[in-house]
Image (cartoon, rainbow, N blue to C red; front, side):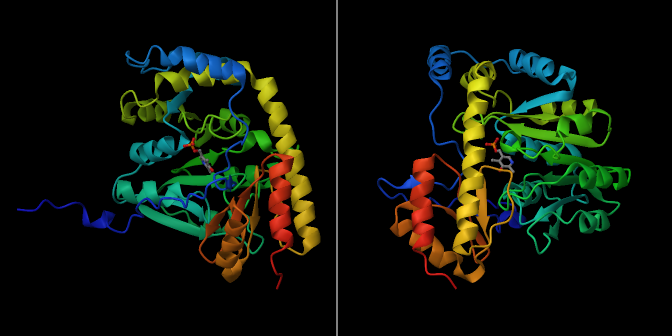
Length: 351
Ligand SMILES: *Cc1c(COP(=O)(O)O)cnc(C)c1O
């Protein structure tokens, strides 16, 4: 007798191992390329000595620290095994099989996957011709069954970012019912002062949550830790559906150490943001279309030329992230590595 897995999961994408090229520069996952700060590394080593014990399931020390930093009640915070886990917990917490999750597309790859795993319906709203979120179309696509609306800003992979007026107008117009989740994975790279702070927007709204992560600016992608600021009942349910002990002990300690070293880490982010502007300007000068970006990556909407561009980059020992025949996302790294990418982009035949 053979066992049967859920037939509706057959179309889920399986893991595609990335091509490993010895000596290649990885610009594919929006990580920071510099390793952890010595102070953080020390805390990680110290915490590692205690891994015979289970982690604090309440993540108390970090929650207290974040609550103080953000000036929010800890009861409105949930910490997860990366913010991608929190995306999944949000769907689990809010959606049954008849319910829908609305998100822009293309956007963060996890949204359709976690929706499908939960057996909920996905409503994908295409981006505008300028590769930005189409807030009017998203509003129009909300149905009575819509429980969750993911708003990724800056948007992964296009980099486009919502400004205060348009985002507030959208939040004010969303009907009663769904929770709007502002995914701010790249918040620390934002330099435009007209981009609002999601936590400030969520403070006074009963239907808005914010996702943040230690994977990007804080440089802890390999440790898996992120958090969600949400209305109290939502935060409580997120904590209930969390896989027990999945926020590991080393990650909890490293996140606190990274908050201790925040000034130094934010200086790195400023360097990356400045590099982003330089790289984008150079690409524009070469004739590439590059949407305005506030994240630590640029998007090249190369359409059917994407696979050739990807191959060209690989020949130059650069691993970028190609999305089918849509475009390529390239992480901004150190000036040196960015220059290597720019050289490859320059030698790619245009047109
Ligand atoms: C990278 C990223 C995350 C964070 O993922 P983690 O699970 O915290 O590593 C969340 N949302 C978006 C849009 C991202 O690009």
